[in-house]
Length: 174
Image 1: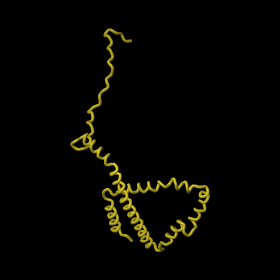
Image 2: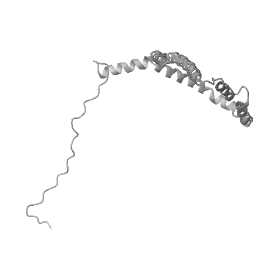
Image 3: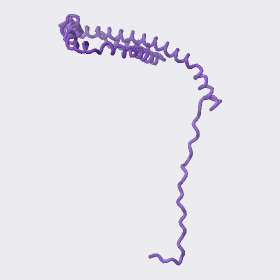
Image 4: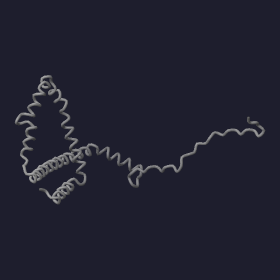
């Protein structure tokens, strides 16, 4: 069973792995992979959504639950492989969790590598735009190369009421 020290070391090792721009690259890589997968969806829907295939859905679901190669059966078999001794169950679950963490780390590293290529490609495609933006920023403030906000007014101007002519002194009110 993993000790607290081992778990902390694992956490810090993975945290070091994602320092700097790597999380950005991982997100860009995951997005690129999602776009790649979504491009095929309309064509797959046209081929998969036929009346005949829709009618077979109950049979396919039944197969998933009862067949020896169904997903539900595979999960049940994994649960059945757990040891009967409660102390050993924790060790087995820790091992399974470690496997999943390693698989997730591998996937994130792959996405980061893919994302780095995507970011490099986007920067390369937009070099001219970046150059123009930098040039415009230097024109706004040539000393720092960044725009500065104009000074805020110190007080809002007051609204003045229209002058009302005064009543003559001998006028009677009433």
